[in-house]
Amino acid sequence: MDKKRWSDLDPRVRQAVLLGGAFEAGLKIAALIDLAQRPSSDLRGRKPAWAGALALVNSGGVLPIVYLLRARRRRS
Image (tube, rainbow, N blue to C red; front, side, top):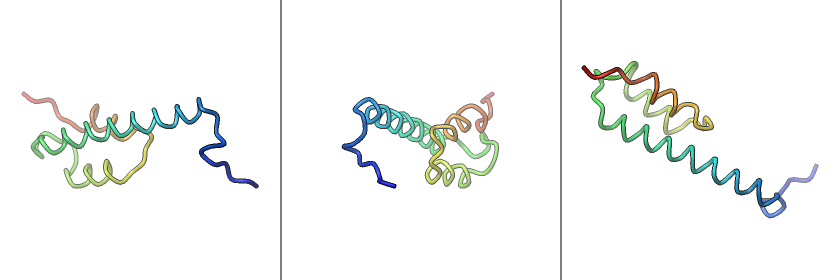
């Protein structure tokens, strides 16, 4: 089985991969900034666990979205 090289891919596929990566990176950055600024009492779960998961897990953007929607408690 031959491995495909980046240069062998269709330009549309390369563009989609780059856009997807940029989208995930942006979500991770937004989630990590929010996590750094938010007090631990405003989180569901432990701050170090969220930071480790957000920084280390390649989730296709799913984990940052879960953090932004579900891990944060509403401020009163």
